Length: 263
Ligand code: ADP
Ligand code: MG
Image (cartoon, rainbow, N blue to C red; front, side):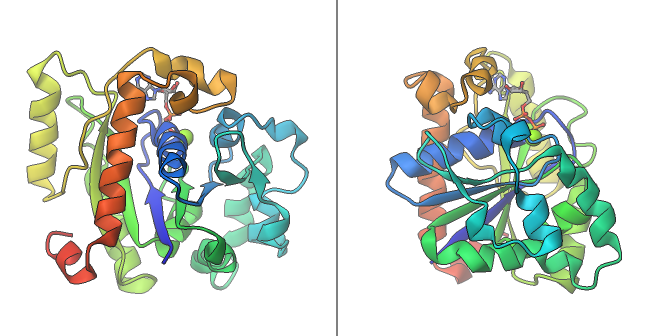
């Protein structure tokens, strides 16, 4: 069984891409076969896995809009995960797909084409609630919401959950919210913890543990073209992502009825 997770939050800079790269590497360390899909025209995931988008000729853009075979576009990376890369061309996909019948299902079709080869598919969403994010939510069993625990960070969570409800109604009724993943977490203050508790209670959301600590090590990883699990193996940040990955594996193995209890 393949588990497909969308990592989504329309706010930029909340560590969506970092979480996809790090959780992908952590799941690969556990022996799982992992596909990462870069759905952001900024192509930060592609870049941070050591692939220069400028050198990518066919990308997820061609798969989503021109019918190119996904298998022909998949790249292997040094982190032990496979990648469907993006380039800046993906910025045109929203416009190209807007008038296309079935546009919500384009990512799902890609996942279905490839899923036999993978245990996990992680979808790195762009910082918007547009066509690509809706298509990712339509393809996913679960959505993980990275959240920086600051005073104003809950703004937008309601909007994201409204989108999730629409997706459940119209295109993917079994979509589950797996929870918020606290990122850029400053454990030295009680403030982060308080914000997290408020958000989780206000929106009845599970919290995926443990929080990912804010550390300078993360700034260095993308330039090295590897995730923090390789560039800083024993750092607290790498270790936290490993623990989150173990918890995701455990959750994926739980029977659906129990998982839905709180979803
Ligand atoms: P998003 O995909 O949500 O826009 P990114 O994953 O690109 O967010 O992260 C935004 C910035 O924050 C990047 O420069 C990244 O290196 C940095 N970052 C991510 N996680 C952490 C962390 N735990 N500690 C410090 N910096 C981080
Ligand atoms: Mg990103």
